[in-house]
Length: 292
Image (cartoon, rainbow, N blue to C red; front, side):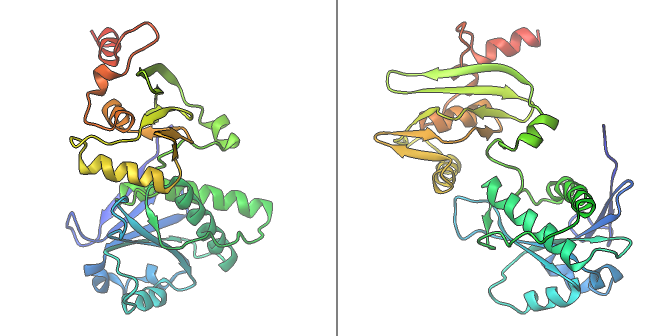
């Protein structure tokens, strides 16, 4: 079922502050570049309790985003502290509040803890929080409400350019697997004399399966983008070094067949022809049959 997301450009410009709401949701999100915070900080939303994310440039080139996640009983007061703090070198921010102003301190601490843990588990951004704060105790009904609130936050964040929750690996959460079972369209392999890898085409992306083996040595033709991607996968233990090979410790999502084959082969490659089915058909041939 679809969702209606309303985005209001507060100052009428494409790159300025924005307000986002989802139909029948009590929450509200405010996005703002750091350069324009002072223009809108007098808005009433800033006086509410909520949870916020700060985004800046990563210090580790393996990642695209550097994220700090926090909570506050008064967003304005906390942001003023960060704006004067030289260690919080962020370029963009987003925060979430409740329109009915009924989020309690315990509830926003719950949201903060869950969001930090999801960000760490996603392994796609440099997270400045370190370890996830402990989850406070809530009644069962409150947990249900906060999990729904969190699901809406997860929808809004990438729309606003915060992609740190888009996981590079496939979740093993059994509850999520039951509700969001991936449809596998086809399975492919890359096989050489020294290693073998398997890839599943799914609605989520192109998933190199756990246990697949990749070439350890990178070719000079491998671009910086893929060198950084491999570095990130190694740093987050998605790829594990074993003798003269690399082994995938988790099912890992790529956005194209070529991105997956580049990571396996350690060089620039054409995933459309590198990946083949058990019947010997290339990815390209399968797609041509499906879309004649």
